[in-house]
Length: 434
Image 1: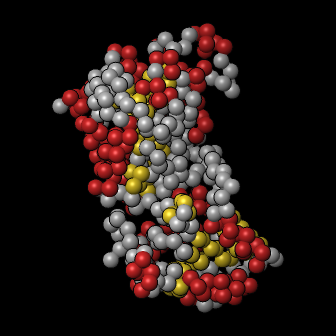
Image 2: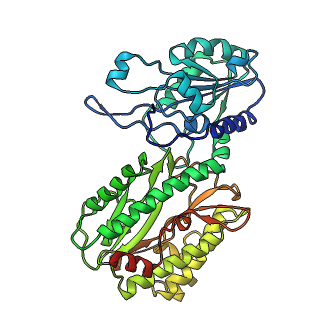
Image 3: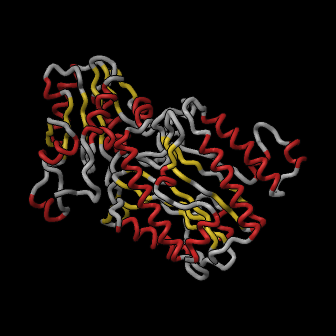
């Protein structure tokens, strides 16, 4: 029996991830990771549970009220890697369904020692007083900002008040470093997420026509996700027809698609907690106008050039500047920028940003905007989106194209291309009209 939709993951992934984390811990240290909360929604309702990405990365456990304790120098071998789980009973089984047994959790995580979580605080006392350092987790994503006292925050506060004389260490820098480079098992899980996303794109290309509503398109995408055992969307889908495409994070999805519009769709399936991230811009009528196709092909050209730049040793900021130069030339050819605009631009505000105002790429993995160090050179095994766009409010036209790409020591591997997710304008028109 299982509590998840996806197929079992090789526990070797989680064993190796724990070993890599332990290798970066200071001597005689303990590290503790907690699961996410089940977040309240309203009245007596709750949002669907989504596991803390770091805990999942180290254990594969997809359940609330779970804890991982790593204490590699523990004199007692049974206390060197311990998974704490919520103990189930007949009442929980009737009202909430299946929860991990110790045996199942051992199979999933590769951790031998499983203890019910009601014993966590008592055991932590003896372990922490033997350790010199305590590693605690915290969401240090550069874009994260919230006033919600989520589980990691409360746990850090508890630990600091309970063990005020200890040396506390940050787990996040180690986790960011480790998670930035994907193993082959992870890449293959993301291949599945990409494949499901591609199927959803094929489905909506056949569905879209003048008069359909953006939310109906979103419903078709969701259907394909669930049909293919995805957990669900990796993020809120953007279904932006006409001028809505010029709102970068448009998620209202409540407008009717009109003949002559281009619709920008940014969506991605999540499979086994790993994200895909796709953007396609297609004609509602099944046929681009001459101008729409010109803009589309300019974006596609920039995308292809940017993909080729994803090589080991590249620095993120320099990469985006080089992409900007290519975009500048395309905007000049499209008549959107003049030579005078380019002569008057500054380094802080390049002329191309009027029509291409966001970054070209971000890391992708257990989170759609995965953890990253923007000053770390690209390495083989990193996965990036490549998503240039041109946004022209005065023409009610916004076009973005996005694929997911693996950096290798040879040529980059485009996972969308590998999954035969079409992107050429002529191919899209042919598919929509076939």
